[in-house]
Length: 302
Picture 1 (cartoon, rainbow, N blue to C red):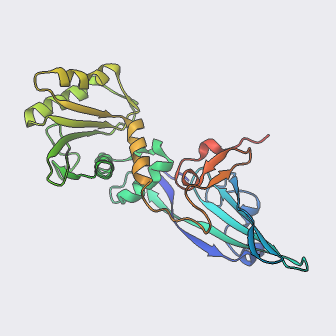
Picture 2 (cartoon, rainbow, N blue to C red; picture 1 turned 90 degrees about the vertical axis):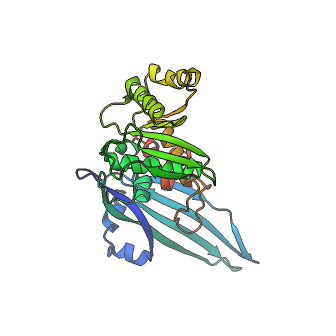
Picture 3 (cartoon, rainbow, N blue to C red; picture 1 turned 120 degrees about the vertical axis):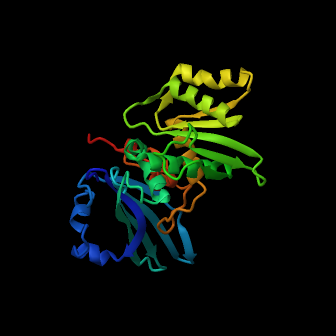
């Protein structure tokens, strides 16, 4: 859901009885019967997972299905777990458990937004990185690099908009901080390409500060060809500088990698490595389903 720069973020889950849904006493019952998201009023995507038959004893069995309806816009989801059992006299009974996502409205670009919430949202909507503030961009890069390299971050200024001499952060790696890398962060709102001039300025800042290793990070999708050549020239120069370039695509890959290690709150009988099928039979893992961008899985009506 979009209201200015406001979005909905999954912050928990809630279990409830099917009686409340059937009676229409839950707020989203009408929308769910129409297959629409109660938050966005758009078509929900449907995914299924079959669990193997569970033997309960002689003459008893229990077949379980997992069913999920999820909104490709805001990520709200509704989960149903079905049971069918029969005894020795073939008397059958059915039961199901219901769970739905709890959503909280967040405002992209607000510096008070916790970095964990920002990371979680950007995993689903990476294009919203263009809406974040300069301070958020610096905080995002600092948190991602720290988690990825296992080091510590030293800030050169308390404010991302303050003069920093061309270096925003220092990343120290190793228990003794033996490796110290200069970091420059560039947030790009409109441009999708990072120019060579800014990378050259960063190399100059490294020389002036005495740093021989650095990382230039941009939220732009890619670097220009001349900019991509800078690390080679810097390494061959007299100062022999080591410069790594991280563009928006690579930054997103690192964000995904670091978040794979974090716990995810899931409904009962759902595992992150579990495979689910959409309406056209395509497979998606539960990790991508519950934490990733699922818009590409939307099946157009036939």
